[in-house]
Amino acid sequence: MSKVPRVQPGSIAVVSHTVPGGCNGQAVMLQRLGETAATAGHPPGLLFIDTDRKARRRTELPGGLPVQAVRTPWALRKLSRFHGTHRWLFPRLVQHRARRIAAIVRRQQSAAIVGCTGGDLVDLPAAIEAGRLVGVPVFLYYFDDYAIQRQVFKRIWSPETMSYLGDIVEPEVLRQATGVIVPNETLAEDVRQRTDTPTIVVRNPVDIGRYSRLRHQFPNSQADRNRPLRIVYTGSVYAAQADSIQRCCQAITAAAARGVQAALHIYGPPPDREIQGSLKESPIAWHPPTTQHESAVVQVQADMLFLPLSFNCSYPELIRSSAPGKFGEYLASGTPVIIHAPADSFPVSFAKRHGCAAICSTPEVESLTETICTLADDAAVCDRLSNAAITAAADFCQQRNSRRFVEFVMSVVREKRDAALRLAGVQLE
Image (cartoon, rainbow, N blue to C red; front, top):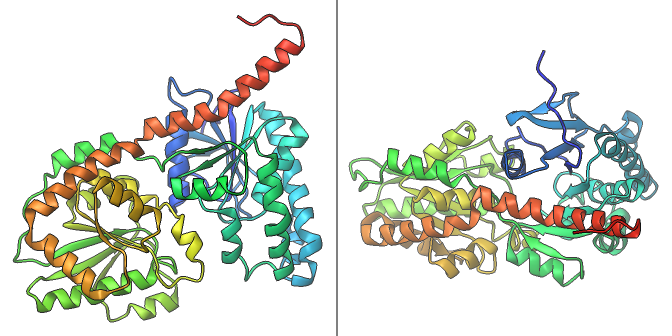
């Protein structure tokens, strides 16, 4: 029987639909924050509250991170299938989940709650209500923009509920939140236009030390022209990447006519049937999902890394403020990165500022073809991009961003504690 991890009083309770151990970017980022926060010098540690309806009864996540599950009753899940119930159902789901989150926070003596976007629109208002019930500060972690995520979930929730979320729920959770955490400046600017609530940028954390060791273990060498170049993408493929990946395949075919042989290698879960069908005849080598360490090895050993964001997606605002978790990893690998994304997206603006990647910010196969051929033929360009990328990757350092996350939350907790002591007449030093 595994040992139940000890939860320190004063922990930060993180409410999320996806938790460490999952294969998506948010789960990986939370795991890195949690593991670093649990080390000496980063008290008080994180407690994860898993709101996935399929959440297992467990007490420990990878890395020994503590977890508690909050399940949605079967009857409420079934009712969500009927659009006519949604306007009545959503507030009740919020209240039900809030009470269970509050019970965990009270029992574990957590000092603050962090509600995360992604996967379930109920989590943020439930986290706010739980904080009110228990009397602890609540922070919102916008991995993606909650206001724009409504577009992604419009097939699940009725139009009336979507309007309710946009016009009433999000403004209210922003008003009641103690602070907002975002992964990039683009999203920070969007949030600050809607609220005066303090907002801080915590970049998606990357283990810089691991990549430094791997770069020395697998030093970059001039690509062997007797084999096709390995252009690598690590991650899931869905609507947010599909058209850019398709364009990359077309560019690879065009590059072959210019004497540059290449293949796109994708490491991740298989896409849905529609996307897989659209890429059926493309020069793609599909690989199973990898562990974090295996992914880092693949990235360091690639000839080029491909970072796609869609130009033809039904939710362009979400694309614009998106911060792919793999971006910092790509930079830390030192492998030349090709960013194929809209000009106003965060990865493009960051790469322009730091000169750390080759940018193709128009949906043109010719531009992408030229970029692939240039990187294949010009070692000096590759070296320049590699050096700039390694320097820029320091911004994503796991220790730095974990400390920034914890200190932002705990500074408010300390202020609240000190105010309570002063009110009680205790003299503070």
